[in-house]
Image (tube, rainbow, N blue to C red; front, side, top):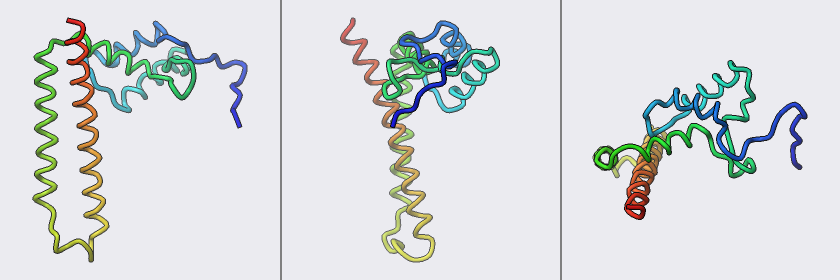
Length: 152
């Protein structure tokens, strides 16, 4: 079952709206990574300006739509120097390996069950999720380095 949009709601643009792109640029500044606060700030700014919140996204359909905030972060990533990307990758790699080391140090095979096992399992799952997020950030930065190598 597909949902019909109300007639007063415009569809999502195929390219980032210039007004939304400018707002996202002021929200992000020169940062290359985004989070939920950036998305919420863009939506709030669009509402305050009396613009439809659909302008915060662009693309042909909902499944492939991208956020304007992400487009600004990608544009910022393309402008920073290589040495900053390399230092950021090194920093993220350190954080990832420290997390693995801490997880291994905390693991006690004699306490796999019993009281508090669910909490320990939850903590291990959270640590693994954080490492996965770090790995995704590292992958994004290395992909940018590879893109630059192909161009230049």
